[in-house]
Length: 343
Ligand SMILES: Cc1ncc(COP(=O)(O)O)c(C=O)c1O
Image 1 (cartoon, rainbow, N blue to C red):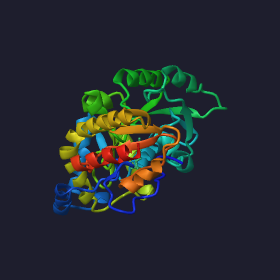
Image 2 (image 1 turned 180 degrees about the vertical axis):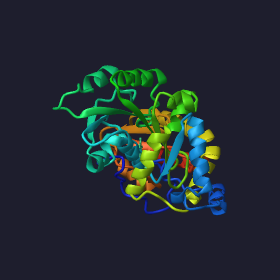
Image 3 (image 1 turned 135 degrees about the vertical axis):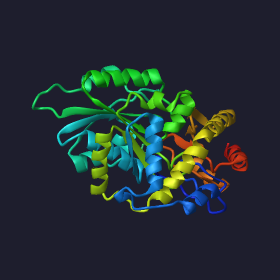
Image 4 (image 1 turned 90 degrees about the vertical axis):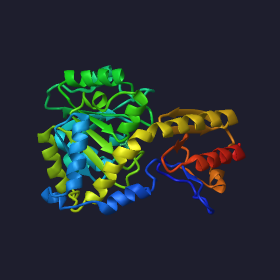
């Protein structure tokens, strides 16, 4: 069971879908931008909106180039395949998405080994663990090549000094650096830092447009021009070269302009929900950025939330409750009432 396992859906109207921030519907402004998007064949490099999206994110993150990909999983995979050859190794946190939830794509498709390290309470790795994991040059070992970090991790925005310590340990061991920034803008919102503050220490960063940013599809990998050129070849090989993809890139550009600046609202709602659940005594509650985790007290049946109009994931043992732009004031009031009713 994982937070991707949903429990029974409500049979009546759905008041709020708390499974993930990926469930959002494109708003009318985004749909207009998609409908109006001028497009071209992006495999020929002709799509103006894809080109604009790639250039925008490369510039904002202070990198040379960027590549639009269909998903965060593919964007991370492209990064790992571009950084590593067969027999080389990615070091990452054992609960990080690249290790736990991406079907070991880099191993299956690229002959890349994955070395999993424990993740600290704040979502960071420990510098000493990284140093110990980096293999010496010996024909028995895979060649340690890439350190892949994640921010946010399970909603936690890992503080910059903690990121910096792990980056330094990786660099000292000769590793390249990748950041899975699926929720990059949630991280910088919570940390109160700039885009370049978070992206700066990394060679490559993957950003998802279809999570809190509300676009229907798409992720962008940013990094050095030579590496992005390699990733572009990998994307073609994996069947991810999309033609008139500007309808999707236009949604991404709209998301960056209109939805990135509003993420603090989701964080504030998550904080308010956590306080509400604690007040109701439903169990153990933690919260970070737009996510709340509820570990129910003994005997509490969270399955009955569906009877109150909520779509939720199965507890594992904590139930993940995610705030996003499709939960408005009315939905938020309704979901608080639903929890009060089961309390
Ligand atoms: C941290 C993290 N990285 C990567 C991904 C993969 O994104 P996608 O679902 O677009 O493949 C996710 C998806 O939830 C994620 O949470």
